[in-house]
Amino acid sequence: MGSTGQFIVDSLVANGIDRVFCVAGESYLGLLNALWGRSDIDTVACRHEGGAGFMALADARLTGRPGVACVSRGPGASNAAIAVHTAQRDGVPFILIVGQVPRRDLRRDAFQEIDCGRVFGSVAKWTAEIVDPQQAGEILLRALRVATQGLPGPVVISIPEDVFDAPTTAPVALPQAPIAAAPAPADLAILHEWLTHASRPLIIAGADIGRCNARDAFRCFVERWDVPTVVSFRNQDLFPNAHRLYAGELGLANPPEQIAALHESDLLLVLGARLSDVTTQGFTFPRPDRTQRLVHVHPDHTVIGTQFAADLAIACDSGAFTRALGGPCSLVATRAAWIDRLKAQQRKIARAGTFEVYDGVPFESVVDVIGRHLPGDAIVTLDAGTFAAPAYRLIPFTPPQRLLAPASGAMGFGVPAAVAAALRAPDCRVVCLVGDGGFLMTGNELAVASERRLPLKIILSENRVYGSIRIHQEREYPGRVIGTSLTNPDFELFGRAFGCKVTRIRSSDDLALLPHVLERSGLELVVVETSLEAVLRDS
Image 1: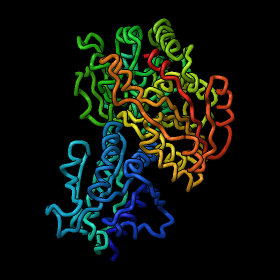
Image 2: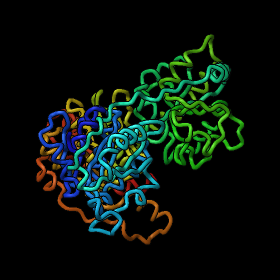
Image 3: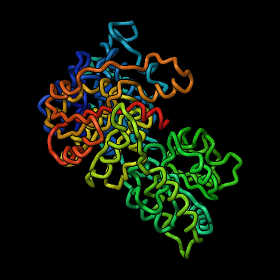
Image 4: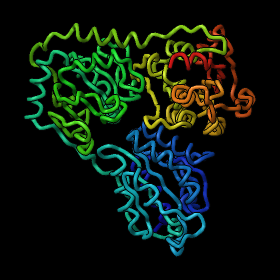
């Protein structure tokens, strides 16, 4: 008979989880004790619960297994809430384990007590509390299933501190076979007919393609059917961006002429994507008048038909769908003009601009250089902010390159995600693009990178403002700037304190240094004196 803490660790390992991220707390010392001395699971000590949660999310996106973060009650759980929200918005499997007050003090307003069910109930897929050690197996099994099945998301488990050391005879929670669903043959026959005769078909590709490791199968599917493809919000790494059938992203600032062209599609196949407000351009695409056929394929039936009525609704994962539909039996309708038109629009968007500015380096120029020199196996992590906008347009992602960016728009994601990516894929080049606003939210996680000697490349855009908010502020309240200006530390000294080799880019002439930075090994920080004028002018 072992402790409940040992049972939890054994169950995580049995389900392929080999790393947990944590900020130590006295309310789960029993779990930390169970992790001690284990060679089959890595415990990563972080500096902030939000950073630990972001690391777990990035790790989950790379492995397909739930990311796990362990935090203490009250302050720890509150700090980790940003990761729960991001997991929910991004559809990432995530388990947050919260050490709770002892069982005798539950619901008595004890020191730092927090009711996780009430606090996280609106953003987590499921919340649970283990008060009976004998129920630990049942609860953990369900947590793993809920976090990964259908549309993945966050699960929060609260465990009183005295439960971790309590004995249990519960059997280890072993992996459950995935719940598989297949499209109905009749639906496939209908779609086969529609795709064969559509003159202007269009695919919206979503994150499920990546979650079920179907990138290669999806590319083959698109090529067989000769259908132009746009990716949903911040999913550029799903399909080769230089491909003739890649038509761009449905994001935050698509040109009106591009959206007008997409509206002309006569068949829209949404594959593995949620039709969120961003992807649908404010719930205006697909066309509300239903003059274009809409086919929605997603493993979670609850996300189909939430805003748009589908003409054909298929609940299965993207890999199963592409395998089941196969290819056309005969030549499809001629679509060359349609494909060329959409590709021309995408190429126009993907061109780097030219700026004559005098207050620093246009960050778009930095992104352009990085995009042209990324290794084929690179992992790019992006924080939220205006500095990141050029990356979605200019970096020509080609699988197996990966993009880790928060669809939730959470600042502070970039550096922790890069640390987790480098831990998971130490032989890949990991590049993080981050603004000075987001960097100081979680840049302390460079301590982990220093401790583990991770060869990260952090490209820091310094313009001393919350750029995206400043843009909105200038637009809505011109001349009334407040709360968006920043005072920064000396980032060169900051980087060196964490063991980084630091490079400063002051002018466009210094951009020639970037390819050498990307080639070198070791932990590096590049501080870019970024033009604010270029950002405001481009908006």
